[in-house]
Image (tube, rainbow, N blue to C red; front, side, top):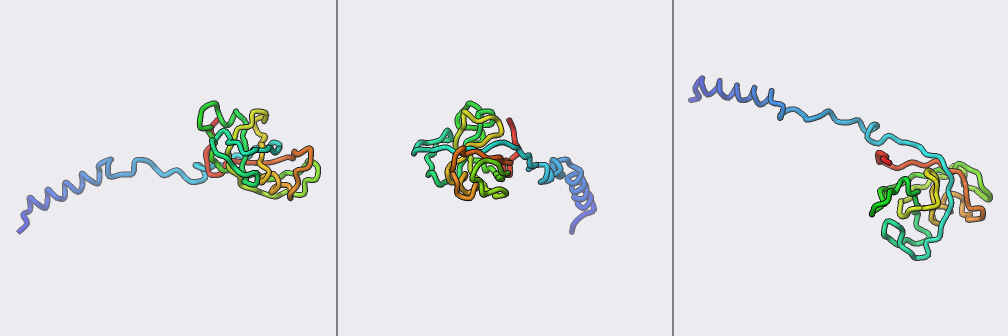
Length: 156
């Protein structure tokens, strides 16, 4: 038979456990829209030849792969580059010659660093560039873009 002392002790232990800070969540969950706030960037897209060489992220890609090179201000000076492997969504904003892809959207992977790019310009592989322009690589090989880092809080 359970005694009154035993019931009182169990009730007190339960009350202490519930009141303990360890029984409560450590922090309120952060809403998803705060974790992945989208920041749009506007610049120009150009294209580059990979010629079978590994990019600054250390991998060799085919010309047809959808990869990009970011400016050093994004990538930093260490290895591996800060944004290597991240996904970037790019929207063709128009401009340039023989650009038949205004409004097209592509997601490409950061695989290299573009030393000649300004902060918000992207250097695209043939595959990414052609997907955004409707197949053209015609000179001058430059058009306007809007882009953002997919699913990642940006830090520079």
